[in-house]
Length: 275
Image: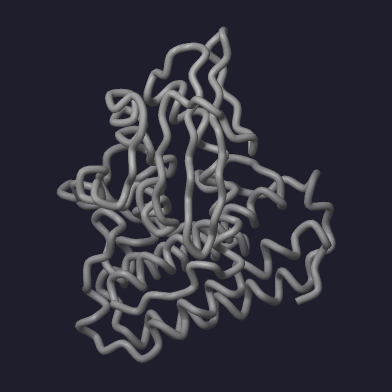
């Protein structure tokens, strides 16, 4: 796929994940489309519907006009209502209808990306809730969202894989960008605090969140010699926690905690950075 150099890594990551998803769902019998996924409230069909809906928005198609049922417990605010509309309109679609629409949508999007000639840094496009964001950030979000949902589908279908695919590294950077807010605001870490996150597995990294005297948090690659809290876990656990797919207590045996246990619990409790 030939795109602007700035967009290329995100286009490659999105393509890798959306094609993997297509391969996963094409052979599914009707019943498996109803399997629950780790994404709260959504089945396999719902996740594919969500992906189709957002890609159609990127293509400039109008959003469906649809009134949501009032008994959807996972719909709690304007953001979740916005995301639910393209999902709910497809809840009774058959497996062939879903796969046909997915394949056609992917073909259209790939053609759009191949022909993209606009400046990614200055061109504004529709964001996840109708807001305006740059073309570059938009595709970055689509690569991230698609990889996260690929993992949701793999978990539901019992087909693990692609934990180190191109989308994984896009996800790493986006999830890490949310860590300072988790520590300083979500967990209320006091000034002059250092928190080390040590992740191992197919994607490895060590990062330190430092809260300065004014309470502002920053993220860097320099290890702290005496951190107030150190959290070590595998990459899969990190993703599931940061994406809000699991509660800390359910993966407590996969997280090694050192230092201030009360602060560590607060950090893990606020770990999710996705809406």
